[in-house]
Length: 150
Image 1 (spheres, rainbow, N blue to C red):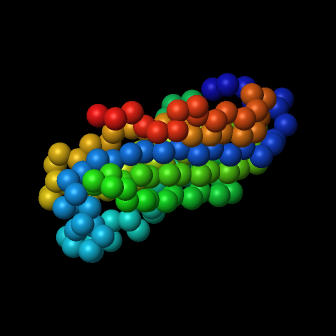
Image 2 (spheres, rainbow, N blue to C red):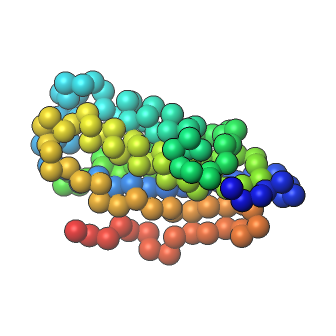
């Protein structure tokens, strides 16, 4: 692990996004509450929060962090796309980019798991860091705001 012992704790924030593509009828079933496993967005949101809290157990060499805020939002888009957006904040000696990315990835995978019985062709089309603030390197904002098309 990187030695962060001499660094001062500062407020760190990160935002990440995952994009899922699915059959539009799958999205219709999600929105109508017709997925047999349950309420997809609530379960995916909870899975993303739980994953962010366990990032250091999932990715070698990540520092465990006492996260202050974890937010997972799922927004349906046109033509069966679902955007998963996460926001994570902490006051610590190291950043929370991985926590935001893990939250987005696991929330997206949870949607896949819950809906695979009706749509095995779903795809997680992209996963990326939108923004990070704090720390020695300062602020990063992704220059390309839209994910690449198929």
